Length: 332
Image (cartoon, rainbow, N blue to C red):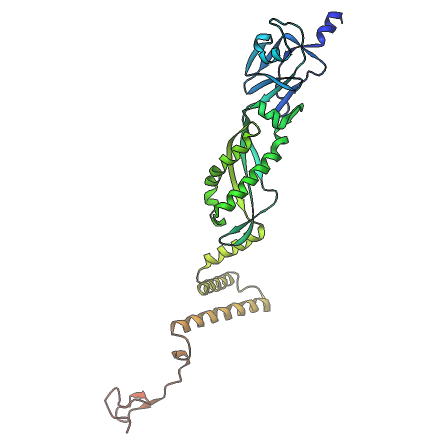
C-alpha cells in the first residue's frame, strides 16, 4: 500500500446505511471512530431515512432523503460550529446518525400483571388486556435528546418496555373512570381504542414518535372467574330446572334402551332400576302438579263406597239421596 492509499484510507468518502439487522433499528450511528470525513464525500439518505450530523455533542445538520456531496453550502450548522470559511476543503470529524422513519407495525402490548378494578356486576375484579400498535419517528432531534443519545444502535425492543408502561397506565386510568361493566367490554373495544389514542399520542410526542394504529384486542378476567361466568351462562341456558331434569331423564332412558339395557348382569339391572325410579318420580311429580298437588288432590282421596238401587239395581254412591237411573229415594 502506498503512502497516498494509506492516507486516503483513513478518511471516509462514502456515507450510507442499509438496515441489515432485521428491520427493527430505530437509530444507527455510522462508524466514524478515529476517522475523519473527507470534504466532498458522498452522503446517501434513502427513503424512510433521515441523517443527522453531531459535532462534539452538539446537534448540527439534518439531511432528508437524497444524495449529497458534502460541502460548506449544504452544512450551514457544521460550518458555523467549526468556523469554516467559504469553500473549506479539509477533512473533519463528526458523528453521523441515521434515523429509520418507516412505520413499525404490530408492536405488542399487554398487562404483565392483572389490574384490579371495581365492577358494577362482580364487585372487585382483576382484569388483563393485550393489543398492538404501530409507530414511526417524526422528530430525530427529540428522539436523540430524550432516549437514544449516543448509542451505536437503538432498536424497537429498547423502547418497548417504556412505551408499554405508559400505555398500561393510560389504559388503567381510562377503564377505571369509564365505569363500563366487564360484560360490556367486548362490545366497546373499538370505542376504548379510539378514546385512548390521544392520551397515548401525547406520551409518544415526548420521544419524537408518532402513534399510528392502536388496538385493544382482548380484555379478560382470571380463569377462575371465567369458569364461574361459564356456569352462570349454562344456568341461564337451562331455564326451567324441572323441565330440564325431565328432559335429561327421558334422554337417559332412550340411551339406555339403545344400548340394549345398559349392559349384562346386575350392573345393567342396577342402572336400569335407577333410571326407572328417576323417571317414575319425575312422572309422578308431574302428574301431581297437573292434578293440583297437596292433600286436597284426587291422588290422596279415599275410595268411594257404592250401593245398589233396590228398584232398578243401578249402582250409586253411598251418599246419593236418589237413584241416578230411576229417581228412587235411597236415603230414608
